[in-house]
Length: 176
Image 1: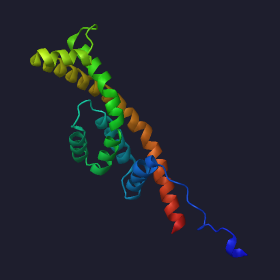
Image 2 (image 1 turned 45 degrees about the horizontal axis):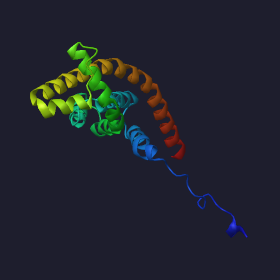
Image 3 (image 1 turned 90 degrees about the vertical axis):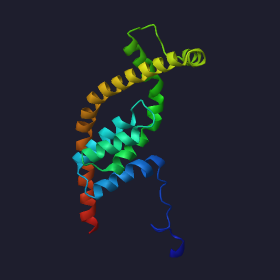
Image 4 (image 1 turned 120 degrees about the vertical axis):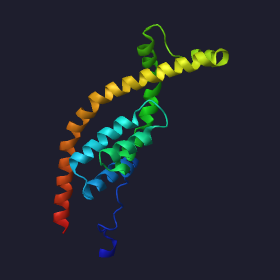
């Protein structure tokens, strides 16, 4: 009769979400490997900022250079920055539009797909100039926002990672 009673090994494990498997667990593993909460908070804060740069193709370069320069974990920085890719793509068009308005000093000038089609069909140089101004303005906006957001994220994440590290340490001492 006891053969039919479920044991703890017979009960199915709860399915782990994609986000937990791909983002949370790797960050917790970094805490287990000795990355300090301060370093992890700085890595995540900068990884978020580098992941949102409004210039496609430079995320990996910025994240790697920042991690190496600051002696942070390169893999963690790349993980966080590349997890921001969907948000980066969502913010790209608004940042380009605001960037063009910032650089051209014209609030009526809006970067649109029709405008770019016209320029690239009729005047390549004009199209590149409009796109260059928009990208330059978007980078200025991104830099200004990042200078404000990274310190706030760092201050907010440091106690969170300190608590997670303490919890991991307590769990390790209980299991030993």
